[in-house]
Image (cartoon, rainbow over all chains, first blue to last red):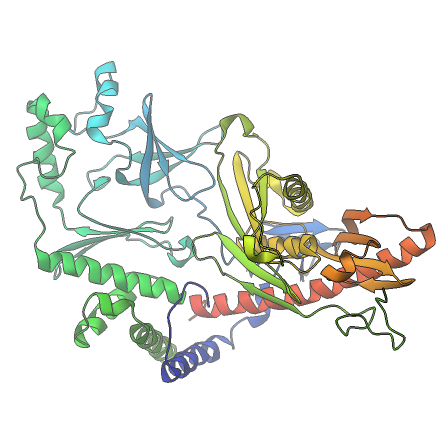
Length: 325
Length: 243
C-alpha cells in the first residue's frame, strides 16, 4: 500500500480492509467506468467534442494520455489525472520555500515543474507604503526573505516567457515562522474558498497550500506583524537580525502545550495523506478530536492502530454524508 | 549443452513460448513522484521517477520540451558474484541511453517545457532480461507519476537456441551465446521503439524470433494495464470522488 509502512496486527489488517471495502462499496455506484489509464480509448459521442488536457487524438479515436478520471463539461472532454505534480491556477494560495535571492526577485520551490518567481515589485513592503522599489530596497531584500524561508503567496500568473509569477500583496501572505511544514501529494488538497484557517481553541494557524505544502504554525496576529515591522524599520540595524528567531521583542518561545497541538494537527494530516484521503479542515479537526478523545500521545498517532481508526472514521463519515443525501 | 530437452522443456521447466511469471507493484518509493517495481521470474528491478521538475543544469534547459534523463544501476547483490561495480561503466551507460531513448519516444515532452524528468532504475536481482524489465518498470513508474504519454511502452526479449525460438531468456540461456533479441513496442500504435540483437540470425528466423518477442510484449502490456487500472481505481476510491 502506498505510503504506509507499518506493521499491522492481523485484526488491524482485517479492520482496515473492512473500512476500505466499505469505502469501495460507497463509491462503486458512481462512474466506475470513467477511470481510464494511458492509451485507453475514451468514448466520444460526436466529432465536435473538444479535447482537453490528458487526451490525445490517435487516428479517429480520442485516447487518454494519463491515468485518471474522464470528466465531461458540455462539449469538453478531459482527463483529470489521479497523481501528478501541482498544476498552478491563477489565484491559488501556495506555500513555498525560497531557494535563491536573485536581482529584484526570489525564486521559490513550489512542487511545480519549474521554480516560481516572486518579484520584489509584486509584494507589499513591510512599511506598507506603495511606492517605486528603489535600489536600496533591492539591497535589503534579504531582510525580508532569505534562502530557506517558508513563504505563503498567491499565484499571479504565467509571464510571456513561461515562468510562473507569484504575488504577496496582503498582510496575510509572507514569511511563515514557528511551525511545521508538511508535504503531502497536491492532489489531496482541493481548491476552496478558504485556505487560511485560524483554529482558535488551539491557537494554531493552518494553511492548506494548493501545491500540497501545508503549514501548521503558531497563530500570529496580522496586525501585530505590521507593528513589529514598523518598529524594525525605524531601527535599520535591527532589521537584519529580526529574521533570526529569538531576536525580536515578541515572546521567543511557543508554549509546550501549543507545540503539542501543532504536532498533533500535523500528525493528523500525515495519517490522512498516508491513507490517501482528501485533506480538508473538517476531516483534520475530526481526526484531532478523535486522537484527543482516545487520549493518545502525539507520537502514538503515527502508529498502526490510529491509521485503522482514521480509516474507520472516514468510512463512517462518508456513509453518513451519503445517507443524508 | 541442451537448452531444450526432447520433451520440449527448457532448463527452468518452461515451454519455449512461455514467459516467466510477471509481478508488478506501484508506489514502492514513497518520496518519488512515481515509482514501481517489476519482476520477471527472478529478475527484479525497481524504478523511480522524479519530475517534471526544474532543470538542474541551466544549459540543458529546452524551451519547447522536457529533458528526460535516465540512470541505470545494478545493485552489488544483484548477481551471483558480488562485485563492486563502478557507476559509469560502459554497460550501464549504454542501457541508460537505451532506456532514455525508449521512454522519450512515448513521453509527450512538448507538454512540459523547461523542465526535466529523471528516471532511476535499479536492478535488485539479475537473471537475464534486465533491459526489458527496466523498461517495463520505467513505464509503470511514469504512468504512476502522471506524466502524459502516447502509449505504454513494453519490452520483452526472445532468443534462438537449439534451433528453437525461445521467449524471455533467463541468465543461463542469455549467456549461452545464441542470439538475444530485445524488442520494445508501443502496443496501441503498433510501433517498434527498441530493437536490439547480439549475435547473428538468418533473416527468416529473425522474423520468427522477433514476432515471438512482440507477442511477449503484448502479454506484458495486458499485465501492466491490469495493475495500472487496479491502482487507479483504488486511488479514486480513496480520494472519494462524488461522495
